[in-house]
Length: 242
Image 1 (tube, rainbow, N blue to C red):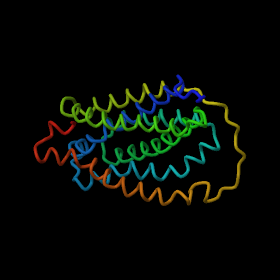
Image 2: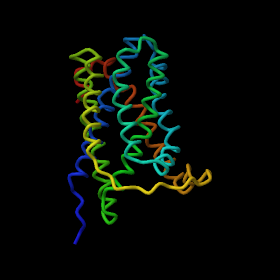
Image 3: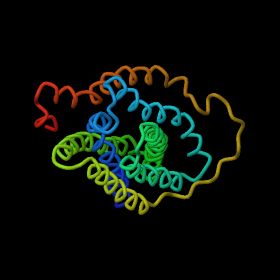
């Protein structure tokens, strides 16, 4: 008999992850417009500014696994989730491009840790015999948010000020934070302070897979950054969300 996978606890982490990525994807396609309207940035500068988020997330991820193994996972998950939600409010009050870039980098750092922490917690709270299935469902919430968030963000950008879009993203992730607080995680024995070594941060066997993912992600990142601007230039902005 299969061990039970769909529990209240598992559903809570799915909802929390969906709301986290909904906030992320809600603002993703409209940030280029905001940068051009607010700071009069060029298309090249837009890509440079937005890449700060990804670079920050990449820089912190090799260390996030170590932090999660060394310290309590749920507090670290909630801390970075809360920071991720609050930073949305900062975008509205960033009066200078430098301030926006700093916020974007902080957002990337928080995102890099909270996503790894969420994946780890899913593994912790699900039966070992069904962890592959659990991770599949967990990843599905990302895909659902990816399909809904950009569409909603672009429609909101056409109808409301950008402050409203940022506020909605903050509300979504704020609700997600509350849901995440309800997730119960099993007690974890603290790890001893082992000597630091390269293999604690980089899995050499995973490098080929990482390179493959990198090559797939580059075209996606290029497209999502500029597709809305391109659609506006050729006159189909009203349907870009669809």
